[in-house]
Image (cartoon, rainbow, N blue to C red; front, side, top):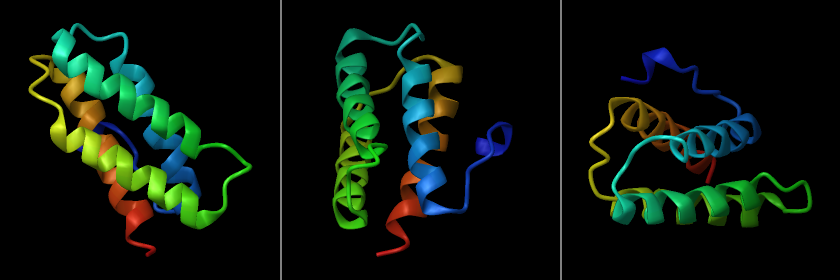
Length: 98
């Protein structure tokens, strides 16, 4: 379902796309409990985009985002779901480099 979004194949670009997809979910009408998980994932993803991080720390942050996304409940919003699926795909790109 991520056909609608391009998922970068380069890890650093995937980190940036990950943050962008999670930022996009903030404007979607998702349940408050799910929104908390997504908000935390967004904050960690934004941190992962920092130029000050080494590659190992960046991957650690992306693993944290992947865990948070796994913990999130249903969104009941198709657009948010597509952004989350794209974010998960971005996580896979980054974590495949381990």
